[in-house]
Image (cartoon, rainbow, N blue to C red; front, top):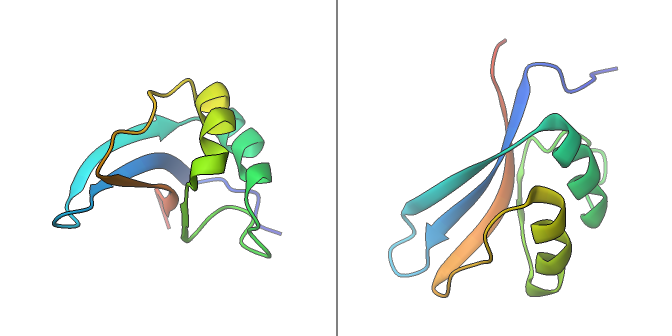
Amino acid sequence: MYDGANTEWQLTSFDNRDGQLSGAFPISREQFIRVRELFDYGDDEWFSDSYPITPELWPQVIEILSCPPPEPGKSYYIDGYATAW
């Protein structure tokens, strides 16, 4: 069973006007383990996909990640990606 080794996560933001990446906020493994419980991730336990942050999740996301609040005109996601193969 995969244990999430060689995976990193980040909170990414995209501009709603042009879809361009507008920022990334790193997420530690400990933060990720706490924040993933807010999502219905099915069998994607280590978030190999992108998960949108909906308005009702923001209070918990800010508390867990100690990140800034969302900016108007941006969409936010939690993304996981491999750091090594």
